[in-house]
Amino acid sequence: MSSATVLVHQPPKKEKCRSSNPSLLYGIDLGVYGLERILFARAGNLARRWWLWCGASLIVFGVATDIGVAALTNHVGSPLWEIAGDAAFVLSCAASSFAFLALFVRFARMQNPVCDSFSENACGIYLVHYAFVSWLQLSVLNTHLSTIAKGSLAFLGASLLSWGTAEILRRIPLGRIAQ
Image 1 (cartoon, rainbow, N blue to C red):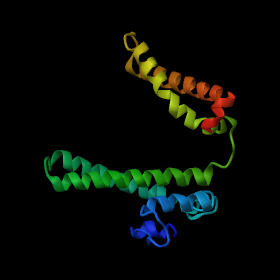
Image 2 (image 1 turned 60 degrees about the horizontal axis):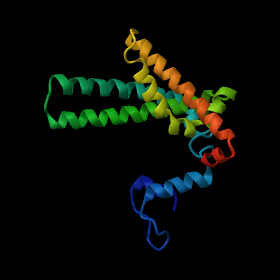
Image 3 (image 1 turned 45 degrees about the vertical axis):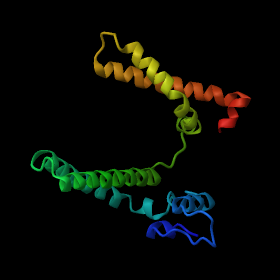
Image 4 (image 1 turned 180 degrees about the vertical axis):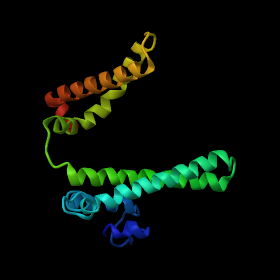
């Protein structure tokens, strides 16, 4: 089975594979061939056509904004306009995601120790950040700071504390299980 199965939305044949989930097969394809050779290849279609994705994302964003404004002002309560607005939002998000991926695949070639550390600790940061976010938001709640200052403090503090905690946990032999 290949990822072409996913594109036409046909379930795999039962005699070849026991799974009827095409997204599972797509994930297996990505795992076997690797993202570097399929989607994120330095000389691949995504990197070569970065300008196309950026332009498309701007156009789709503009159309989605127009549809959203029309749905919220002139056509309030119309189910067709709501569906069109929702679909345009989804397409805008997808196009923007591919545009950012294309930009990074094309132009982000240097390795950076800070970015490498963040990448290595991403799972750990995700697992422990909630406690720090909750604690810091509660701690700045009754201070006489602006909303921007409170949000910035909570964001920066939670990011640094989560990153540091994940790094410390990775250095503990038991913490290596999460890698």
